[in-house]
Length: 246
Image 1 (spheres, rainbow, N blue to C red):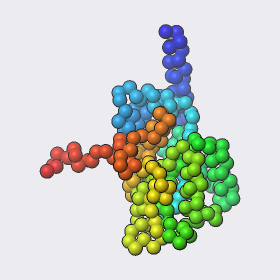
Image 2 (image 1 turned 180 degrees about the horizontal axis):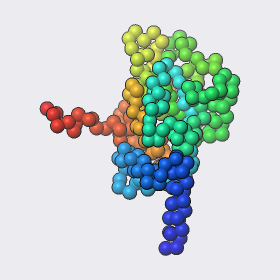
Image 3 (image 1 turned 30 degrees about the horizontal axis):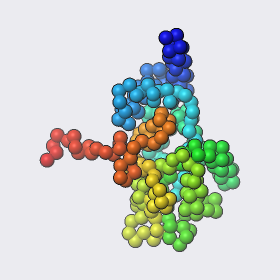
Image 4 (image 1 turned 135 degrees about the vertical axis):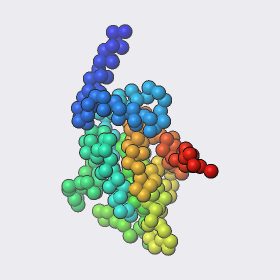
């Protein structure tokens, strides 16, 4: 019993520290964790596991790539409120590469990406925003002298998981509309392996955040449907609960 009480006190201290990092009160922090657990459809009491995972301060490294897109997915994340983007990238995840939000540019940014990939080999999350142009050798989108195809495959090789955020990355979106001159397609088609997709134009930022929190809590991404979408967010339709449904 003494050991259990000691562990409980240690957990309580970590929760208090996490709440301070996020500039939240203790109650607000626990409400946030409960909301994430509810969004994920986790059983009653799972909010404690979520709180412990977030409080542990084991921030996963995130490499965020941009290809054929309008940056609307990032803009959607910028407008999230619980938590705000700065709390997300400073206290929940370690955003080690993101072209839009980086102050640096050129060789410095590419060096940061390579360093993060090397130091977190097999552990980092790869987030992809935008479709991948594949026609004519992928010449229609290059970053740091590499085509989108080359960069995607390089970064995905040692990633713990790949998340395609937005409709463009999920299945081609607007860039892939007929006549599709650049041969744009979704991430999974290029990699040829399962990818977690968070579709939407723009996507719901909390679906993405909940996916990351699930990874933090359980060390794995959530269950997905036949399109690679997290079941907690996409398995039901709002229409199913409409009182005017025919």
